[in-house]
Length: 79
Image (cartoon, rainbow, N blue to C red):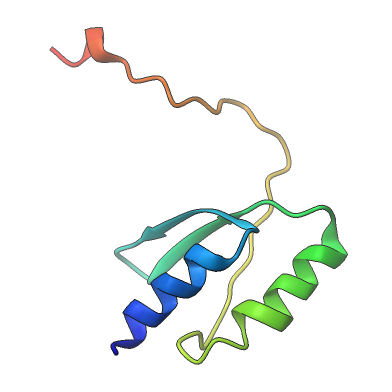
């Protein structure tokens, strides 16, 4: 099995991960996770994410304020 396949399967099994994107640029993947608090986040990173053999490094950012978050597509504006 390829490490990418194993990572993809692991991500599917982690309930904290609500979205995963393969990226270009400096990082390979962007995970959006939903956790209860900072302790839960720490447990997720230390006990799951960093324990996966395909994960070497983790960089974290936190949302301070949700300005806009929608799944609606601007279909009328695409012309």
